[in-house]
Image (tube, rainbow, N blue to C red; front, side):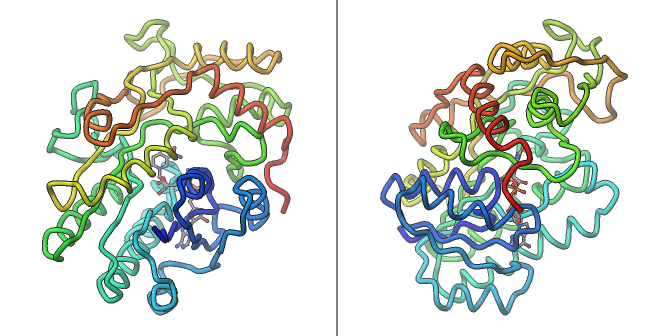
Length: 339
Ligand SMILES: NC(=O)c1ccc[n+]([C@@H]2O[C@H](COP(=O)([O-])OP(=O)(O)OC[C@H]3O[C@@H](n4cnc5c(N)ncnc54)[C@H](O)[C@@H]3O)[C@@H](O)[C@H]2O)c1
């Protein structure tokens, strides 16, 4: 399939472009580099062993998005484009609603107009909110989120479900990611956050490489194995494979829209990650324990049964693989991608 990968220059998108190319699909990237750099493209092409087309376009621009589809000949869309920093979304909610919802709507309008009916969406475990029981199951109906970023995911899932219901032949996979980490095993592409990382693994890897002094662990009095928060970390290469599995499954889906958790089904604590990263890097990770962070849950992990049974997909890579691959990327590229 010729697949439009929106946000394909970003962390998860770039790894998914490689997985699509390896599976014989033809990925085309659309990105405005608001949170990525053009220098990722030659590295994607080097790893894919073939040229990959990239269109620099802001998908909130409906005319530009329509022109992209008019010339594209796409069979499917995987929609990664969006802003994702929870803290920033609290400070600038309108920016997040505008970018995430408008970009989705212009892509959907263009799909309807140009007859593209297969869609894979980057949703998040954040849609389970604070009340869903752990492990999270896709049949939990009361989706809510505790911040504007998460609300955009809840709203977009709703929009996609409604649009798929009324457009003949539409198939939409709502992929709820848990905590994507790691990097391509080559160390050539990986996560390159702007500013201070919000997430644990990039922060830990920046401490290991000397870009930051110490880690703050937000709370060690949770009801978990060692008191620190537990999350379901999933290697980005496994996550990328989950997109290919979802894409290949779309036509066989019994309902127009369906949600799938992409996680391992296991929680790993902050301190377990710190120890695994120290082992992978051979560097100490100094840390302080601070107070709990508002809105953080003690533990979060997937029930990964549906993806296994229906997509034939399971995560294969371990915490050790995630740390080793993150470290290879970080130590080979201490400042991320070249500007
Ligand atoms: N990384 C995570 O922890 C995580 C977890 C759950 C869900 N997700 C979702 O997965 C998707 C990809 O995440 P990521 O970690 O790869 O993020 P990322 O920021 O690395 O990638 C997103 C890409 O989208 C581009 N983009 C943003 N707005 C755009 C617009 N209006 N037009 C064109 N391009 C635009 C950015 O430049 C960037 O390259 C996002 O939708 C994110 O919300 C991420």
